[in-house]
Image (cartoon, rainbow, N blue to C red; front, side):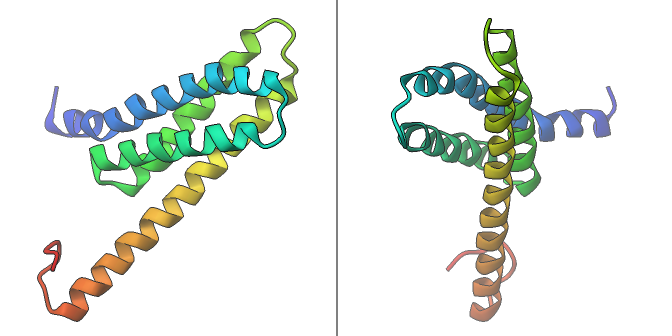
Length: 132
């Protein structure tokens, strides 16, 4: 394999790993939590999990786009819930849509934090990448 192919795989691997973990979590735990029908419980359980999985994807790659790709993989895996007998399409589509929205929100947050860090470095007169 050439260097560009292995570089692409090394960039995609964290997104695939953590996106798959998040997608499987959503497809299993999310399904179970929604069956309980307790108002607010799904958000209280699933949002911290999303933050964890997206944070791990970013930490593993250091790239903002990995966060969104992980969300895309997770949303795709969420559609496995359609294989569960009796699952309505909208009961799967809505959580998948929110997975993508959570990923977009995380991308915005990570990008803003990175920009703030670069601004702080510039103000401190440090070379790029060096923290005070």
